[in-house]
Length: 512
Image: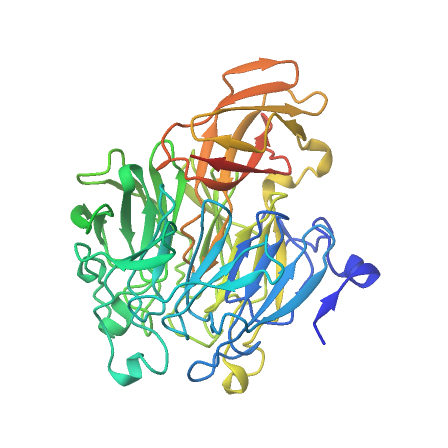
């Protein structure tokens, strides 16, 4: 029987504004949302704004080897309904995969326990999930990003399946490849080897090529921001090429976060992580890295650090340009909550400082996710996936909704988007947004819909928009003209009041 929740039971379980008392700081956490699985990975569905999550071959365990199935669930943030789906038609165990969203809203999941498989989540098809083309190189824990021309680039991933995994000595050599939608096939890029992204992890190649911080940029380029302190440019045309982009101060930041919070200005916030994946103390380091043209040495500014060191903590981009980090732990170790950090922090792009918020209480450590929802709240869930070998309570079959401080005044303070001139706008195009009564002065932002796993979210980026004209409650917005900045695909459009309160977003498609 599929797992479903609906109706009155859900009404008392979850609503976005049914909040528990804040513990120790601003913001509020809602009650626990019961889920049928551990949320290792997640993505926002572009047709509904619902949250799609998945675990592995089992709801609470990754097992050994490839059994060709994945448990998935869908959470409707409006109604609170949760439904489960067993995905077997793609013959793909999507645990520890790469993931990103294409220009048409397809979510492409690659590798993992089924190390050469790929699968599409396509909301336009009856079965939703369908098989994708085989990878050239078996991999797991790789990072994948969607390019400005619609192709998808991936690199790294020495964790992989039973037949091609670290326990069989198959480490390293996880060089780049690229998916071309025009032929629906993967091709190697011999000019972009994996070597430049490697960290100095004590576990060697098994860990050093994991979870790269990749940001698609101008002219078909990809900026590699970490977790290695050595940064790089990747150029994906032809056979590919690469060039150094400088270094961040400090040490490597494995399983830290990297967020492009202002794509127009080329600004990336990074924070947390640890020098090594396991048996390593988490760091508080935080930086702003600024890129402009797709070449040269990036500008790096070291910030006052996080209040608490954390590895495995997600970085979630908010519509105002603030960045929220949730979960993590102070000592890198998988499948334990022993050093869990449950107090989230928020970064202010004006003061460039971190502030602690209300305690989530529930640990969100290895295999947890954090995702921005359409109403400006944040889902935080999961952690564990170690089956019966877990200490009791490490597998977290739940999530919670965090209401950021900007919503502390309630619904009455929020602007509302009544309509938009179109829901399908070209890069560089004009969009007119009409707000509800008495909007005062409003600004706007676009935030690309998320895909996330293992702290990596290459899709989220923010494009701030200042109106170029206003007539009554209608605002004319000019979109950036570079597809490397305004990456085609699906975006939240938020209106933001003069007090910094965001609306519920409209979902807009941007095309070339």
